[in-house]
Image 1 (tube, rainbow, N blue to C red):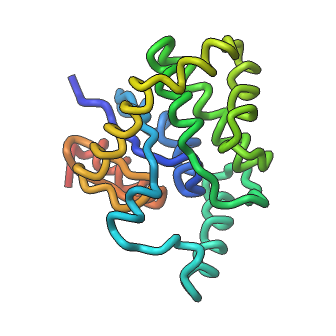
Image 2: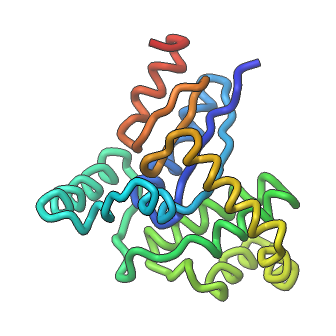
Length: 200
């Protein structure tokens, strides 16, 4: 049986949002599943010493244009939020707690969280906002609020971030397909070719 695609992402990454809207369908076409693995991109930035992309002179201006063009290319609704960047700690912890309860619900929550930030401009670093997103999906608000701050969930997010770094993650989104790493939403066509041909 083919291994699932590993999808490492940070909820505050615009390119990760774009990829999140396409990766499941792409994988399903080839009989694959996707493991969604939120992590903290800030740790990667610290480890690599790279600045935040949009803060780099000239390159940042191009990247903003590219993000908007990429959203149009993938036909994904996109509105750059007024508050950027934001911490993804809270929604990531919420995701992992939900994943332990109901995998499908966690996936739905992840989509809703991405859209809350990248379409509606809601501050997903705010626990109240995250709890509202989850509650709208039928999640018990109090149970999530308690579960997401347990030592186990805090450690899970740390481990997932460390694992992403150990696998060579240098930016988001980051995919691992059959042991092969792919960085960026613009690598989805290459991933499709990889899945079609069995590697190249």
